Image 1: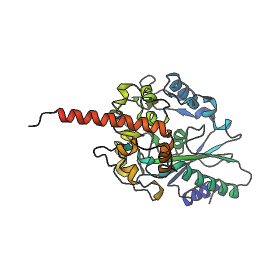
Image 2: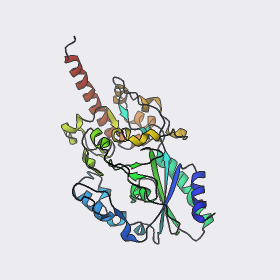
Image 3: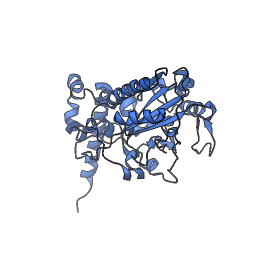
Length: 339
């Protein structure tokens, strides 16, 4: 077996559902080729694509996105001598439905179980050790969603899927339900064929977005995105415009709407990873119960899960918005004349 095949085999043995290889050379080929309304069928460099997105302020309060975009778009500035990126994915689809009965909130599926960062990072570290055993002179660096790496771009170039119009990765095998990680390495491995964009004329994700955050195909304004507003946005209730709060519905952590409607989810298969299975409180989060949580109870209840990301204050803000929206809906329903 080739070194590339041995590394892929090691990745699958570690529990990754899919693995692919992309090469950095030549750097000029690192481009974004999806058409947009402002630049139809035009090819932009990855750096220019990021800079354009930042120039519109679409990153909101995520200041780290604007920090050194040149480094974020060139892995060679992260790992000297980097030649290859090994992209991996883990399926988190549990084949369960959220309980959105009266008085319940909604938590995005990826946060129903344990924190995927820890799980994937541990597997990546093991995979790095395997690589170093196979190629002792190589150097590696791994990331899971937290480093200055545009992981979806490299996942598409590695053939794991393609970046859909909602800006998330779509797989013909796993639909919209892959969590990503990557290893940068100095090894010159054999690359895979890049993923082909199969969105076609479909616009279901744009139509499903409650806040119209997908301002055009492949472009998301994070300042309108419910996932951003409920997780990354730092600010009190009044820092979120009323026009957006009313559209957030019962979503208290993340939003799956644009993912749920993707036609390629018909191919989704249940994950074999028990860590992603929901708990009663994540599948059926009672808003009243959550609103009464102290900071200590919040910390202990959601220990080891992604839900601690917005901290207690941010989470309670989200719950308050959901309760207000729930009351508004109930009042509207009670005002409808009964026949």
